[in-house]
Length: 488
Image (cartoon, rainbow, N blue to C red; front, side, top):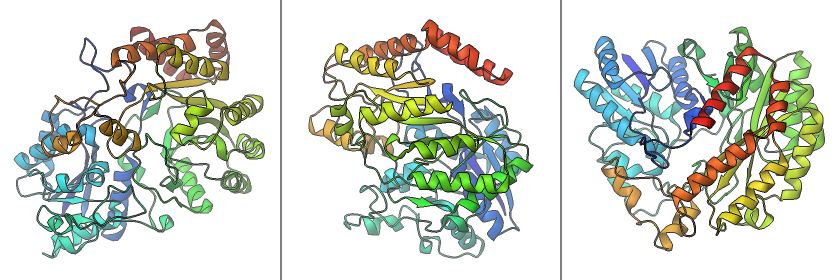
C-alpha cells in the first residue's frame, strides 16, 4: 500500500494576539524550523516492521506547501492510508488537509494523530474528516492500524486506535491513566522501551531546510533522548508525565549515524534532557569513549545542574543550554511549581558563563502574580541582570488541560467549554487566552516588545554578540533575528 505521513500546512493556526496585520508580534517560527520527530518515528517503525509498503513523508510547513499544491501531491501519489499529525491550535488546517485528501484520494483511510487527539479524544474521534484517531504514541498503534486495514481486520482492537463509534464505550467511564495528564480518559498507546524503536529515518527530510535562529551551522539535527516530564509546572500541557529514557549507547549510536550523513550540530529536543546530573555525565563519558566530536545543545532545568556536569558537557562539545527561567522572584517560581530558586538560577548561569557555555533564558510575562506594569518590569530587571546569551520572552498562554487554565475558568475569565466547542467545530474566531485580570493583552504585548528591545539593543550585548559570532551562518541568523525584533 501507499502510505503518506503528513504535517499539514499552517495557514490558519490560531495566533497569540492579532496586531494590525492580523499576526502575532513574534511567532514560534521566528525562532527556527524543526522536523516533526514524532511523525518520523512512526514512519520509521512501520518501515522496519512492514517494509513492503511504499512510504511518503511531506512536511508542508517546512517545505512551504500550499493546500492547492498538497492536492496535486495527493493526486499524484494516490495513497491508500494517510496519517496526519496535529496540534489543537492548528486544527483548522488539519481538517482542511484531511478534506483535500478525501477529495483527491476518496478511498484513502485518514488517521489523525499527534497532540490533539490526546488532549480531546472524544471530540477528535467525532470529526467527520477522519476515519480513525490515535491517542498516545503512534509507533505500534499506527503499524497495527495498517496491518488491520491490509488484512480486513478490526482496527479498533489495536491499542490506542479509536473511531467515532468505538470511543463511545469510554464516555463517562472514569478512566484515568497516571502516565498522562488526567484529561486522557481513554486507554492510550504507549511505548515503555524507547530503545526498541528504530532511529528516525532522516533520508525523508534531507532535502528540507530545518534551522535554528540560535544555531551555528546549516547541518542541524534534532534528537530526543527521552520522552515525558515528571514535573508539574502549572502552565504546561505536555501530556506525558512519566519520564522514560533511552540508553546512552542507543542515543550516541543515533548521533554516529547522523554524523555519517553530514550533520554536525545536534539539538536535543527533549522536554527535559538533564533529568539528573548523572545522565549528562554518562552521555559525555560515552561521547569521550568513542572519540566523537560534534556541537550540541539541550533544553533543561537549573535545579538538576551541578558544576561537574557542566564541566563535562563543555568538554564533550556542549555549546548551549536553554533553561526555563520563567520569572524573577522566588515567590513566582514557587507559584509556578518550578522547584528551584532565583539563587540557584544565578549560580547555574554564572557557571555557564565561566565555562563558556552559551545560555538561553526562556521567560514568561503576564503571570497571575504580576499585578502591574511595574511587577513585570521588575521581573525583566532580573532577566537583564542574569544576562544570558539569548532571551526568549513569551506572554503566558492559557492552554486547556493546565492548572492555570482551570484557575482562569474558575475565576470566570474563560468559558469552561470554549476549547471543547472549538475541538468539535473549529473556527478562526477563537483566540488563545491570556491572564488579563490586571494587564490587558495589548499592554502585555507592549511589555514583550519592551523586554526584547531592552535586552537585545543594549550596546554591551551587541558588542558581545558580534565578538562571539564564529560562522557566516550564525551571522545570518542573528541578522534575521535583529530584523524581526526591529520590525515588530
